[in-house]
Image (cartoon, rainbow, N blue to C red; front, side, top):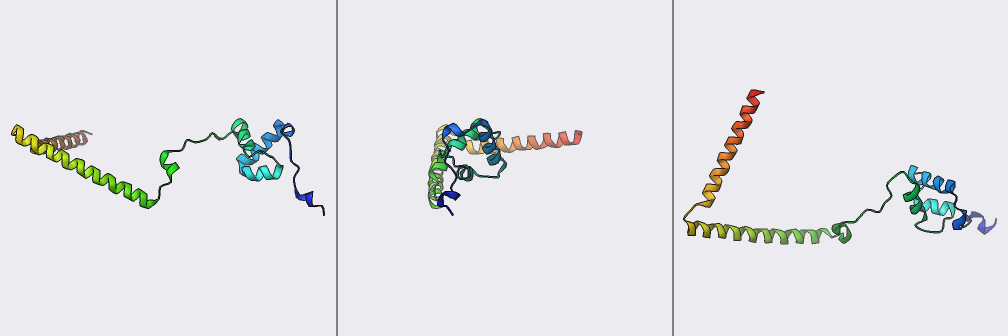
Length: 139
């Protein structure tokens, strides 16, 4: 047996006919071969050659997908937990600052902003429930 018998012949770019390209594209898109397997089977030299054919002649969308920043980082669960804990501390500090601002405004203006807000919220919610009940009864 000849050693080179199992090797497929390397092709040059001139050898790739449109019919050949379409055959490769069909085999890859139908799932018969992967891009790498088709490259090895047919002796195609360039790593991106088949991908270029798929983008040009294929029926599926082979365009590159933009990666998000998080996908690029591939952060570990511990890093993600630490980021979330940092975010919680920042939000709690913001809440404390806003509550302090409301307390100062209440003292300065001699008002009860929290009480007014809660009573407005309750009355709006009661009105909404009454409207919903009235609409349901009419139907």
